[in-house]
Image (cartoon, rainbow, N blue to C red):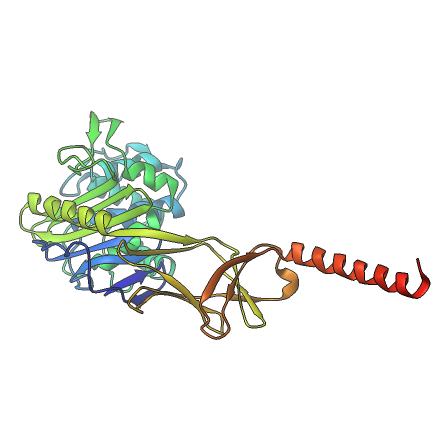
Length: 382
């Protein structure tokens, strides 16, 4: 079974039981692979189990700050930010730092002090920030099982999420160019009052310790209670993947699991497209898709398009299994000014015949003109 994850929806789909390669066995307690463009889940293991994310929390903090703050805002560092535990970028109390630089320190070096400074700047306090970001994640991103109580992921028994929700959050964040650029940064020159250094991403695939050319970004996480956690994005050919692994005992295990999932997904799946505005006809009714439709399917599947009289477009594989279903928009004849796809009225299967309605109109006018000339010639001899 495979599934679609939209930003605000979750649609279960089915595909052929026969795969080119069997899904890998993983050590991580939970994992998910999401195709970012289609929203289709290609692999899942305990994806809905509530777990501790550790610093993968910072993906949510970063996109929230990018969307809700002003990147050139100057943030004054508080004593609480200066004194937070864990990984830091060594901010000093009273230091003034642009918001964008704090987001870079947050994602690239996993700076907990940057996270606190961001939260206090945006919401005034950690408590208010937690309320604000949870509301944002539910209403804007569409998560279902996430509850954050801080901006950095240091352990709190009430700070929880799921692999599925983290994939949704990353999917949403990757639509933002500023986030993508920072998430994929390997090195960044950091100049602060207490620390001048080159920040190097902690993600070992991204920085080349585990070479994989298709990887475009990533974030690591670890606290004792969460085990090792990892978020990874990768692109190859027409696939854009998000891989989340949660709770590995050893760091190398989460990287091995991620590499297995990348190989499995790239080797077994591909995307197909139906362009925005493509028009389908069934009987006397015309329908069009309001946006480009992207479907991820097994490379072994042969997909047939079927359309119902209510305008539902179904994609079915060679075994008759439903791969995806889309509701098309009903239109009037006057709206059609581009090629259409006709559906057979008996089987409702799409014929890949293209008809340009402008050409049809021209033919009708031409035939009418010929008929008038013929009539006049017979009656008046003209």
